[in-house]
Every structure is written in C-alpha cells, then in structure tokens.
Picture 1: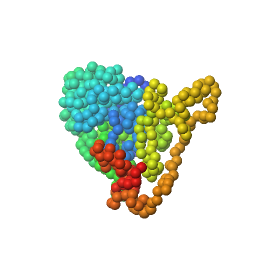
Picture 2 (picture 1 turned 45 degrees about the horizontal axis):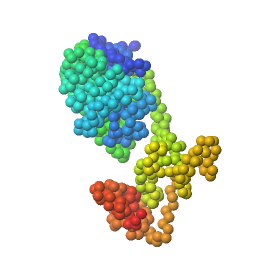
Picture 3 (picture 1 turned 60 degrees about the vertical axis):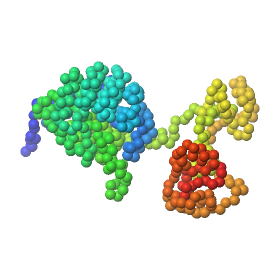
Picture 4 (picture 1 turned 90 degrees about the vertical axis):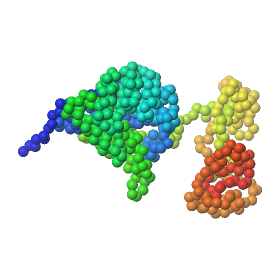
Length: 499
C-alpha cells in the first residue's frame, strides 16, 4: 500500500533576486515552500555562502580561523582573492571593521579605497558591511557607494536610524541593501516598509533579522525567521517575502567555546569551532537563510554537502588539503626578490635597518636589512664586497665597463647570495669563564656563564625593549651595552660583559 504524504499548499512565495552581474551572477529565493520541503513546493535556487574578509588584520580571531588565511590576513585584496580562487566563495563579505568609532575609527575615504580595490580584484558578488554604528555606517557606506559607482555591490547593515541616507544612496547607484532589525518580525517588516516608501524596490532588499550563534540566542533567531517565512508563504505578506542573509561568522567564532584551547573535556579546539559554525549554519538554513556569511573553509565545505544532500544541488568541491599545502609552501618560501640579483660585488646599497640576532643563534652578530640604490639615490651609500677590502667606486665602474664590453672583469666573480645561513660558532677568544647549569623558563637545563646574569627566576622570553619603555632609558641601555636579550636564559638575562 502506497503511503501518501500530506501536503500543504501555500499562497505566497519568497521573492527571487539576481545577485551580482556577469558570469558569476546567481539567483536566490524563489521558494514556494519551506526550506528543503521539495515534496510540497519548489526550492529552485541553492543557498549561497559569502566568505568573510576583514579590512585589517584581526587580533582576536581563534587560531583555527587564522590558519587558512595566515598568509593574506594583512591584505584585504589578497584575502578576498584567496577566498574566491582557493576556497570557492560564492560571494565576498567585506567587513569594514576598522571604521568602528570604538576601534581604529578609520575614515570613510580609507574604507572606500579598500572596498574599491576589493571590488576591482574579485569577480564574484561583493557585500560591503559596516560596523552597526548608525552614524558612522551612514558616512562610510555612502562613500563606498560613491567610489564603487558602476559596481553591482550590496551594502549593509541598514537600520531604521540610517535608512534615509543609505536608502537614497541605494537608489542613486542602483544597489541592493541589507535591512537589519533586532530579532523582531514587526521591526523587520517596518524597516522594509520604510525603505520601500523611500523608493527602494522590494526586490533590492535582503532581510537580516540578526543572527545568534549556537548557544547564544540562536533559538530566537530561528523563531523570528520561521515566523517571517510563515507570513511570506501562508499569508502572502509581500513586505516579508524578501530573501534572508545570516551573518553568523563572527557570532560563532567570538564565543569563548570557539576560542578555548584543546583539552580533555572540550576536545580538539579546531574541530569544536568548525562544528559550532557548521551547526549554526544548518540551523539557519532550515529557518530559510539564502545567504550565509561564514569563515572556516572546512565548515563551509560541510554546509555545501548538506545543501546538496537535502536540496539536490551541485556540490562545489574544494580540495582543502591542496589549499592548505599551497598556503604552507607560500608561507615557507616567499616570492623571490629581484634585489638579490642586483646586489653584486661593487653594487651600491643602503642600510635600512639593523637588528640584533637572538643570542642562541649567533652571539655578537646582527642582521642588516638593505636595499639596492642607483648612483643618484646613493648619497652616502655603501659599496658591496664579497670579502676583503671593498673595491673603490672607480674600480667598480671599471669592472662594469669591462662587463659591458663583453669581457669579464679581471679577478672578479659575480656575487651570489648564499642559499642558506649557518649560525657562526661562538668564539670567545681568550676570555676565561665558567659555565653553570641553570633552569630556563621552560624548566630545561641550560648552561650560563657564571656572573653574567642577575639572580632571579626565568619567567619567559623577553626583549629588552619590552622591559625598558622610556626613550632616555633606552638610549642609556644601548650606550652602556646593558641589553636585555631575547633568549631563554636565567633571571633578568642582563648581559654584563660589554659587546
């Protein structure tokens, strides 16, 4: 006997919307039933994932989220391109967090430059996101709309407090907007009405009902989204038939559970955070989310498979192991500089910075950061020499002239930078000293030169610049050679023997 599934017919629908332009544009919405209820109606378009990118390097992210983007965190353009090209983002969510008046408070002009650079660099749709500060977002997003004129971007969050300013910008530049309301169906509807009365078409509005993370208000978000979707489908409420966006990335990863280290009780920190993000995302998908703002590539891949299995959509397969390997290679072997080719014997250079070497690598040695310069820039520049006495400028010029004539310079070989550096043996000459076994900050036995340290307890590695902050004291430390070395020695690690 065949089982007949009871079906409900709906009079309403979710408004469909084209996101982006060109080959990477896509459609969201268009549902005529509840999420994944394909036995009752249609779910023609799959939910999409926007990968979150910040406009500056974050200092409060969990290690699990830092790792996939470690090589690009300081460059929003490179970060966005990696999210697109390596991790297959459907969209980029550019969070202009540095404009927050309670944070770095960067100007609207600076933010707009970054937004324009990212918009020019990526081919997938771009969401430009403010900081939920009503006044600052009105200023920043208005400038972004102006600078990114001609780019089919989405701006948000727009609230009741700034809907007039930003609604006008959306009309002027034909932009899609994200209307944000604080977890309330009536406030969500009211904001849509205000924007629509201003002239913003309903098919240019995405609803952001405010998202809570797993264990931090997620049930409230789900309930409100569920009620909004019910009104759209069963009551045919056209003001609530707009697609949803769920900005869950920060809500999940800022929680203490996502940042607690690995231990027996909480388990592996990385897996824990990924599962928290994935579980939050699946909950919001079942509440009707069409766009998910996410962060970790593994959580994103899990959600793609979830959508494919429930909705019959195609999975965008990303080989995360290859992506991770490529990132490690990139971090381990940075792009070659063409400066090394120019630094041949006799070339002119300028010292930019000199840094002490850690004492456990090469006592008494320093590393110099140099740049190559031409004759006009040189001024008091240095002439490089591979060893012995540096050639005089005239001799260097003669060598260059010989080379230009096709003849090798007599007694000269092209300078080749060493492929790797080997720490130089610690030679103390005729200095007599006694070694003593001490415990370093990790409890490991180390040999220290007697009477070369202050009594105390080794509490951790420190740089003398962290211990001395006053400018005059710093100068005194340098002049008297009482440097506090970065090392794992004992006590204050004060070097008593002059350099």
